[in-house]
Length: 109
Image 1 (tube, rainbow, N blue to C red):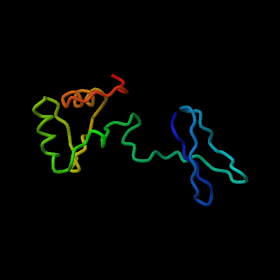
Image 2 (image 1 turned 45 degrees about the vertical axis):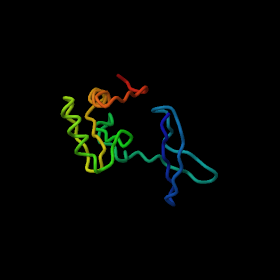
Image 3 (image 1 turned 90 degrees about the vertical axis):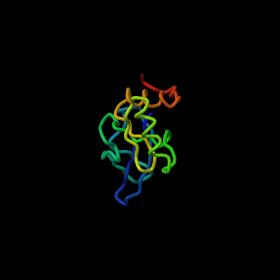
Image 4 (image 1 turned 30 degrees about the vertical axis):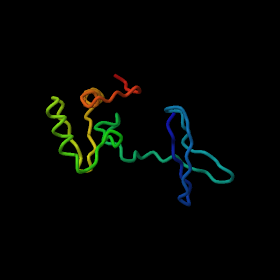
């Protein structure tokens, strides 16, 4: 379940967990009312793609080597200067991980 953030007039933020699309627009904690923060933060698209993956990244010194590995495997993938691959969509992510011998048990595909 996703975590939703709520803010009061003083700028205090609290977090609450609700099922998807079931979060109320406001919550009362004690005598304070908190309004839900609805602006997405650092989300490139509504689907979450492209996705910069820190977990499958490498050291910054090895970024070019990772780019070359992806190209040689036939899965050209952008790699940030910090060494983190940027996956365009779920299928691209699956192919890129597979060419490195990584399997994600939580994958959708």
